Length: 171
Image 1 (cartoon, rainbow, N blue to C red):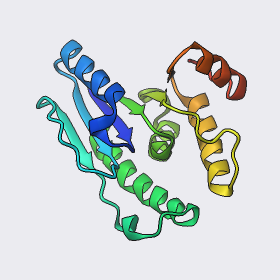
Image 2 (image 1 turned 60 degrees about the horizontal axis):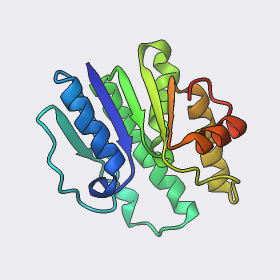
Image 3 (image 1 turned 120 degrees about the vertical axis):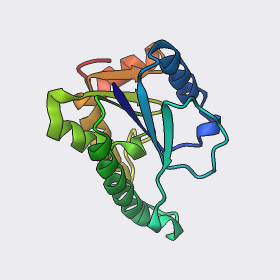
């Protein structure tokens, strides 16, 4: 079976992701995992041979760090990740960041019941949404939460808040 993770984080410092990967590798030794990583820093972690980290290199990375240019970076990350998902054709997609949700969301819409979509709610950054980019991110996060087969939350109070704001089908 194949699992894809989409992540925009410093992989070395995200213990939650590392723990999940370590658990999955031990529990399911035949699972093939591809991590589509958009990181600000290089990673130094070594995973087992069935885990492949694919660093997504953006041509738009040189653009200024503001909301206007963030949109173009998101579109480039979406297109690169989506094409890689098509080639890899995972059965499970696990989304770890709201910045990495577009490709898995579109992939799930296309392949519907053929894939299992997991959204891991690390933080609720866009509530309430302030600018246009945050409004787009809030809209996309709401869509992926409603589309996901499983939503993972950090604790009970976050689950209550998530249920109130997004009303997911499976958290």
